[in-house]
Length: 413
Image (tube, rainbow, N blue to C red; front, side, top):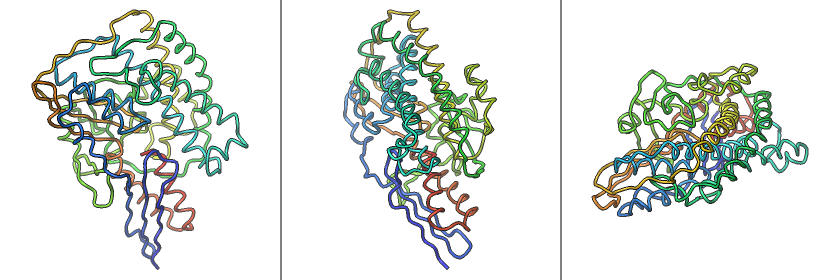
């Protein structure tokens, strides 16, 4: 008997996707994860554009993680022109990343993922019975939004971020407000970690062929080397030699592999590799968890996000203190266009992000390649879905579809 399970619209994910599952008798015959958003051709749009225009254009790829695209493109431009920004600019970028992670992870955990585990169809339904839990999510998200608005100029698509640094730096009093906000939400971040450790996650131990992250796995890293879980370390310039893209016949996102195999990126891949580098207080909280990390269970990506949230709080406090000690400082370094090619890599909330640009002698873009987390996640999500379905073939169709949706949501593609 053939069973066809179709989830034509994945709810509570940032993008647009669908899942098709075909079961023939007692065997899984086919599984396809389809990203259904229309092609937008950002790499083509950057052609002939001045380097000053590139960050604002590519940041429109994603409203939630525009900071990642803006920074990755800015760093690629600086690389092409042979420019090194100051330590203070790097610190301000790191504080901006803290804001991005607080906003993005809180959004995912409380409003996209948590309703699944609390038995609700949405956060709005959940808020009727658990108003304080939902308020906590809003409180964390609001601190992230304020950090992004203070540093970038706006919560979404802030124009203060540019290649070479920033148009201006925040007032000292604004940085002090950020510090106070971060101290104020540490208890909420600890409560978030405790909450997401208490949930009943489905068993889905799916060892991955490879995991990929910036070297060391820390989400706040601005390093230029990447690391595969088999011990291979490579530079940002070698990215396209290791991460191979191919067009998927049933998805608008490309499909990426390493050495011909699917690989994991994102919060679980990072946390698996970065545990030793975290703030001492975060390490103490991790010791209390009932769910062991590192892990190969993709559902624990949600727990990994909660770990990164707490680390973001402490990293933000440390970073803003260093900025206050260095205050005031120059917001940017000068750029002189020249012919060349540049590369930028960053850990976006959903995983490793790569930008490459080539420029002519006037600073106009003559070529680009952008590899997003979504493209890199498709293959590993499909493998995880196949493993999950094969293990749970005995479940009714409705329950099997629910678990498949929960799995995809755990990746937040």
